[in-house]
Length: 186
Image (cartoon, rainbow, N blue to C red; front, top):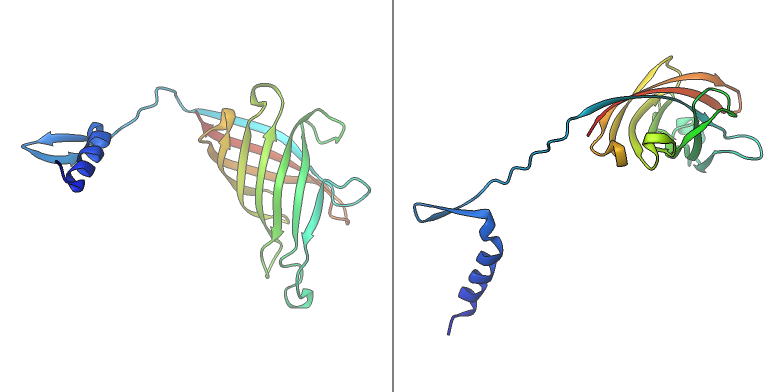
């Protein structure tokens, strides 16, 4: 009768045998290489982000207040957003998706936001697909660049960048931001 160790070895060897090859009576792990036959595509998107924190129907709201405002100014203020994305700057223009996520004032020395945002699309070819943004947004710069770190649906394995430019804002903190996004994906 075979010992427990030899039975265990046989079971493991049987399960893993497709991953081993024999060379001169020795075992080595075989590399498994997968190739994709699909070509990468470059997609350029243009839309407007409407961030409203004032009024009766805000699309973003403060969820964290700083512990000690005098020590760091606005540092630590955090907002949760579900902002509309439209084809044109007017809020009444065609809705193409939503920006859903968090942004927070992450700098004690200037106004730099940490953006953790998904752009979820529900129009045309991109219906059901999303892009993920994770990066620094220096809102007082004329044009800001943030990385696209991933995506879903049509944008699976996406990588790229988003250029943001504020086209309108008010003293209450509401803003309309133009986005030009370039992504490589399969």
